[in-house]
Length: 304
Ligand code: ATP
Image (tube, rainbow, N blue to C red; front, side, top):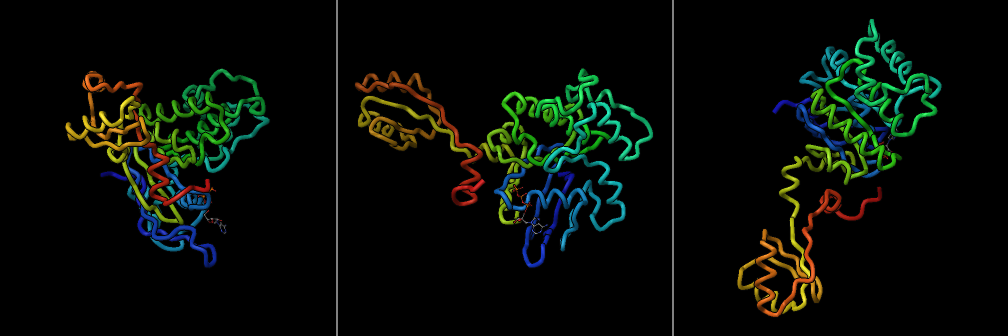
């Protein structure tokens, strides 16, 4: 497996306090890596470290195969675009001028691809409008546009949908997926919105008290999720009898609700039960959420 970022027992101390400890994470090339953790778990510290804004106290990491101890790391970091906390954009300037500033900051000789970037993020028609008149979603997309200057291969987004309305969230989701698929950009995204993250991430890292306690791919996660069919019946006794006869895995939830943890043909079940004087009032396919998985792993309620 080729990793864009791999860390080996990273530790970051602030005085005696260990913000990161024995942290091992692996971001596969082409992935959308969702970083999940409570407030204070160490997400921003980790991101700042990868971006070169802070130094690890000990441990090593590689970005695109280059060690943080190598002199080449400075050049490799040019392949990273990042938005940490709030996007670095100027409210009194237009979208285009904001991008031009970024071209100058990173020392690019011309404004090549500037219009393409604006188009990618859907801001090509904002003309002379200054950013202070943009919606939050537009500002966030401009932040991503700024991070795209220099053609990064890895984009790091710290809480990209914080404060966005549903429309803004959908726009950012679609933009991330487009950049991942069309531009083959790998993503590291930290977010508290687990439902949203589970819609786009291809793998997840769960960080707790400065340590990655679990890395899991979307496929592995889906296998972990117990899919179940929940049925509401008029005669629980007969229903249980039938499920026992068929040797199906089930759990009685209430006087008339049963969860069945196996793939079943609901129409067949309805017919079979009706012959036993048991009506199926309704049924629902249910699935565990990423949030449940996360809470089980962390061991209790999150204080996010
Ligand atoms: P949030 O979701 O709230 O942004 P986070 O997971 O990003 O949280 P960090 O900001 O990385 O967490 O902080 C990790 C821990 O390190 C916290 O306990 C924080 O108080 C501490 N910390 C961060 N920066 C410093 C600093 N400069 N000096 C001392 N402690 C710090």
